[in-house]
Length: 368
Image (cartoon, rainbow, N blue to C red; front, side, top):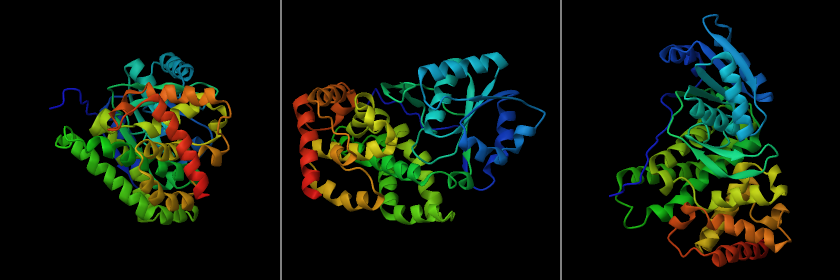
C-alpha cells in the first residue's frame, strides 16, 4: 500500500476535434466567468484568433496580456498584476507549453479558475498541474512548481495544431517517448507493480511508446503536407494530453526521472543548450538514463528512430559538450539532488552518474 501517491489526472474538461472551440462560451458560463484575461504569445496568437469568435461576445469583458516568452517568476507576477488590474475571474492561456505552464501557476497563486487552448503539440504541459520554471534569459531555474488546481478546460482543434512548426511536434514525440523509458524500470519493481493507479500509468506509457514508434514518420510527413490524418491527430493528442495522464496517474513514480533531470541540468549549466527544444534535450536524456541503467541494447534499438527524426544522440553531436569538467560535475550534482532519479532501481551515485555521461559519449562516437 502506498501512502504518498497523489493522483491528479488532468483537466476537468477536454475536447480536441474540428469545431471544438465553439464550446468555450458554455464552459465560461459553467464557471460564471465574466471578466476573462487572455494570456497569449505572438505568432501563435495571430493564428488562433480567427478560431476564437467568442472573443467578440459582448456578454464578457475580455482583457489581453502578452507573455514574455518564458514561464518565469517574473512573468508570473506580470500575469497576476494584469489579472488583478481587470478583476479577472477566469484566465485563458492560448499558446505553447511555457505559456500554459505560466497560466497554470499564476492561476494557482491567484486562486482563480483557468482554461488552456494549446497551439502546439510539443509536450504535455497543457495537461499537467505543474510548471517548469525558467529565468527570463531562458536558463532553467532547476525546479518545478507543483499545484493541486486542475485546468477547468483544455480545448483545441487539429487545424490549429497542424499549422505550427514541425520541429516542435518532433520534439514533442521525443518528450512523450520518455514517459515509458523513464518510468518502466521504476514501475516494474515488486512493491509497486500491483498498485492499480501505477498499473494504469504503465499501460498509458506503453500506449504512448507503441503509437509513437509505429506512426511518427507518417504523422510528420502528413503535418508537413498539412494533411489531417488519423496518425497526426492521434499522435498530437498523445503528446499533449494522453502523455500527461502518465504522470497524472503515476505521480512521482511515473512523472520523470533521469532523462528530464538531465534536461534541467543542461538548461541550467550549459547556456549553449538553450537553442535546443525541450523535447530534443529530453531525447538525449533518454539515452543518458539508459546509459545509467546500462541498457545499451535499448539504445541500439532506438538509434534508427532517432536518426530518422534527426534527434540528438550525444552532447558532442549537439556540439555542446562542456570542455570544463566542473560543468559536468555541476550537472551531475544537480541530477543527484533530484529525488525521482533515486527511484530508478539501480545504484545511484555521483560517480556513476558522471561515468554514464562519458560512457554514452564514447558509445555514440563509436556508432558514428
